[in-house]
Image 1: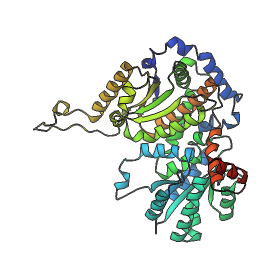
Image 2: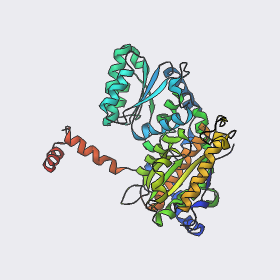
Image 3: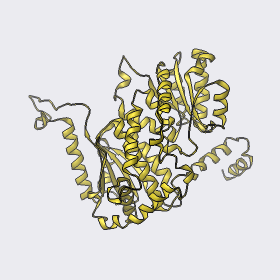
Image 4: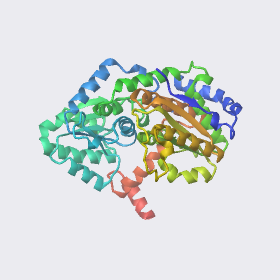
Length: 446
């Protein structure tokens, strides 16, 4: 099988190959800290060898549970951040874009809740699921995170109303801590099927745990191919692989060299409309991992050619603090050509007979050349196809490079202390028990 590839040639100019190579000692040190567990956040390195450690029995258990949930018309994945973004990235990338219009479905519709506190969103979801047998995959280590906890309370009540309390228990799966927390307590009490979120795997690195694998399997996507791709990338980015051949090391070095030259924003761009949520997953991975201690490249994402008609102007001629990482998919799944039109009023007959993907590839190349001419360095990641195997490779590649890059930057890539700031204010404003002092202080401030 092929592997995804990395090309930094079009990032050179603002930086030199010599400057990238000069970071090799720091990158090697970061890679060594990951593999020896000597760096900051070493308690959360369970993702590092996760792909190769997944056992056959675990995959069979996930596939068996997914088959049960596929008997439902819809399955709601309840979770926020890494508890749903990886799943949505894979499902959106792999499913037919118009799957929801198909009358005959092999698999249930996968829906999402608990990733916001939108009253209208949750109300409309409940209305759509009224009188329906649906499944729930509730993902929360503690069971008390506000957004998913509200969603689960509401949807559990609706499901019990729809099918009865006894049958509802067979439609609910909890993915949570192995021993403690509100969701673990409830799951044990009610007898829900459960899977464990490993203690040493943070949410943004959890897509290859049951957090991602179960709902992805429910959607009918091969989790074996996903894991196999990640296993192969785990080998390809091992600490024994020389710097010049290790694409995770080179990517980490290149983006840090660009950052040192004042490129403070990285834009992840794709030319495949099904990759939108891969960009959303990537933003959380790098934003939470690197944005701390007053440091960090700001991660943004765009979908081309769509966003060339909105963000394209700023990227081409705005402040020169950006660089792009472009994900290019070599081969589409289907074949379609531009038809001939006798009148040719739109002037497109010069494209007649050409594959639409060929037009897209020329847009991709033209955009890359224009942005380079406009002072935007470009890194290119090439995927042979958009399938589960190569998505597994891509995910692990980004995770490995993220860990290395964080250590090169000098931060702990595996914590997210800043996430708690809004929660403390929200709890104080809502008068949550135990926050009386904070409530008084924040009301005085207001």
